[in-house]
Figure 1 (cartoon, rainbow, N blue to C red):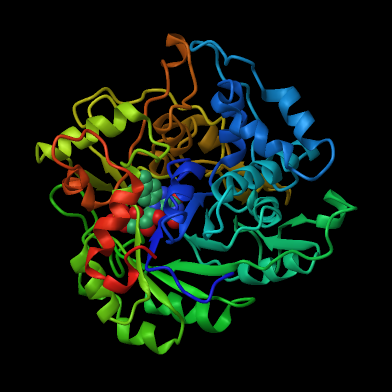
Figure 2 (cartoon, rainbow, N blue to C red; figure 1 turned 90 degrees about the vertical axis):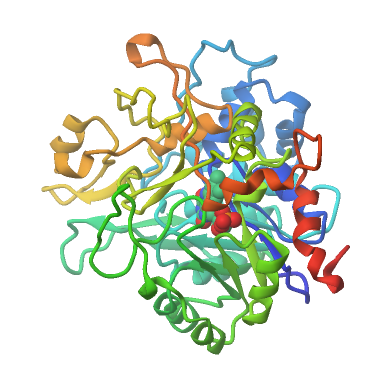
Length: 484
Ligand SMILES: Cc1cc2nc3c(=O)[nH]c(=O)nc-3n(C[C@H](O)[C@H](O)[C@H](O)COP(=O)(O)O)c2cc1C
C-alpha cells in the first residue's frame, strides 16, 4: 500500500453498494482505510445511470475513464436524463458468465474504475476495494478497473483467495491473467477458467500499474497459514472475522448443529488463536463487534494493527443504504429491538448469513415471504458441469424447477433467498416488478450483532451520525491516532 503507516480502522467492504464511494471517501479522509464494495458494481452503475445520475458524479468519473469509446457506449445504453419512471423496470444487463461479451467486460472495468475514482477524488487517503472469492467471473476485469483508478488495497474473503495475489502481481506487470473456476461436478483433472488480457482490452494502455496491497479475510488459523505461506503472490495482511460480524459468516467448525432459534452454534473451536496468527508475521486486523474504544484497545493489545468495522458504518449518513431503512433500524436500536438472525440457509452461497429483522423487508419474521423467484442478476450462480462437458450456471434461489432441471436438488433450494435482488433493494436500486411478477423487490438487510446498539453513535437529539463521528468515537482511546 502507498503508505508506511497502517490504518487502525478498516471500514469493512459492505455489499452491495452499502460501502459505496461516498462512505469510503468519508472514512479515507479521516486518515483511516475506506473500502468500497466491489460486488455487483456493474449493475449498480447501470442502475444509477438509469436513475438519472443525480449530481452527475458517475458521468464525471466516466469522463476520466481512459479507454476510448467505453464511457460513451455505457452512457448511450444506460443513462436516462432526469431518471426513469419509478414504475419502469431497470434495463437488464448481461449476466455474469465465463466468457463475457465486450460490453459486459467494459461495464465491469468501468464501474470498478468509477467507484474507486470517486472514493479517491480530491484527497490522498487510502482507498481499498472488497471482493468475495465466491463470485468469480467478474473478478479479473473488476480488479483491472480498480487498479486503473489506483486502488490502494484489495480485500477478499468468502472463500480461499489464494490465486488473487498472483493475479494482482500479473496485472501490475501488464500481463494477461487467468482464474480457475470452481465447477461442481468437474471431472478429475478438468479445469475451467476465465481470462482477461489488459493488452487486448486497451492496446494503448500503460505497461504497468501500481500494485495494491492484498488483505485476505479469514476466520481460522488454518486459512491464515494457507494465505501467508501458499498464496500465489504477496499477502500484505489478514483480517480475522468472527461470527458476530455482519454479512456472511464462516460456518462453525465440526458437525453442524442449530440452536432452538435455528441459528448455527459457534463454540470454542471457532475462536481464532491470535498467538498463532501473530506468529505468521503479517499485520492483522480483528473484525466482528470491534466498534468501541475498549475493543480497539483489546485488539491492539493482542498484537493486531487495528480493527475492521462494518455495522457501525452501515448506518451512518454516508453509507449507500436507503435512508428510510437506516432510520427504521436506528429507531429499532434505540428502542432496544434491533435483532439479527444468523440464517443458516438464506444465502445461496451456503454460508450462514446475518439477516436484520426489519418490518417490511425479507427479514421480517411476521411479514409475507417472497413467493416468486427470478434470477436476473446472477452473481451467486454456481458453475456446474453439464453432461456434455460444457459449463452451466445455476443458483439455489432461482425458480426451483429450473434449478432441478439443471441438476440441483429441491432440498438444496429450500429456504434460499435471492440476495442479489434483496441487496440491491437495500440501496434504493431494487427492481420494479408488476404485481403479476410478485411486486417490487423487497430489501434484505444484513448487519452484525452490533446493530443492537448502533444507535449509540447518535449524539443527543440527533437523528443521524456521520462516518467521522464513528472514527472519532473509536479512536478516542488511542491518543496517538487522534486526528491521524
Ligand atoms: C451491511 C453489511 C454488508 C457486508 N457485506 C460484506 C461483503 O460484501 N463482503 C465482505 O467481505 N464483508 C461484508 N461485510 C462484513 C464487513 O466487511 C465487516 O467485516 C464486518 O461488518 C465487521 O463486523 P461488524 O459488523 O461487527 O462491525 C458486510 C457487513 C455489513 C454490516
